[in-house]
Length: 102
Image (cartoon, rainbow, N blue to C red; front, side, top):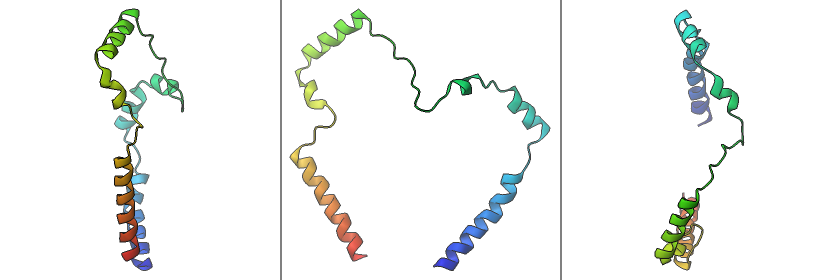
């Protein structure tokens, strides 16, 4: 098992090496240099775009929709019923049983 894994990794690295080491042609280099990179300067990890404000007309429309649809509270994410918990438990038990068997 270890030797086949080692052989596979060696073969994959040998095949990927020339592809990784290939240099760009002058046309490819010019095309990349011509691409605008301004949006890259604005991308930062954890940064989020500003959220637009909700207009008063939209707030009224949302309030009216909420008043008309009384069952919206039942559609919230995170409400896990007893049936859902039983199904999750059964699936976990089957997976553990299969791991123990095999």
